[in-house]
Length: 126
Image (tube, rainbow, N blue to C red; front, side):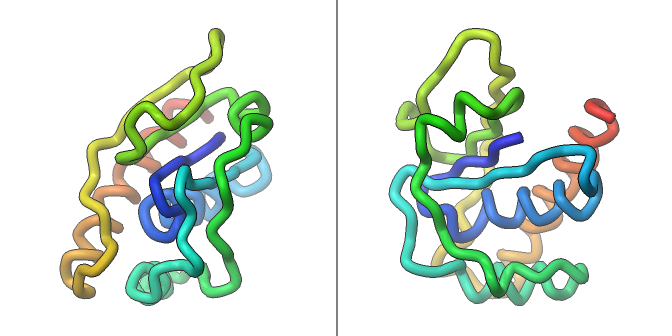
């Protein structure tokens, strides 16, 4: 499972955190960005901590071709055509607001949307 957004500092990190928490070791989870930031969005870290998920030790990572090849499911969030596409993979694009520069109330709303989508995906896959 690969979650991709532009900076790998908010949406994709939150989605990966929820997937790891909900699916445990039943799903190998990766996240990456097409233009990774220097650090995880601290407001996203705070919002996820409220749900008991710690993102504080994570670092944004550059999307590598190998990560896409390794994944069976690729979820994109706002990175447009920058994600390579390979036949036989399942792709979904989740149209979610970018939490960058937003306050905690907006980030909580985005977090909750991501959680709902991940819960549906977990139920479908497992």
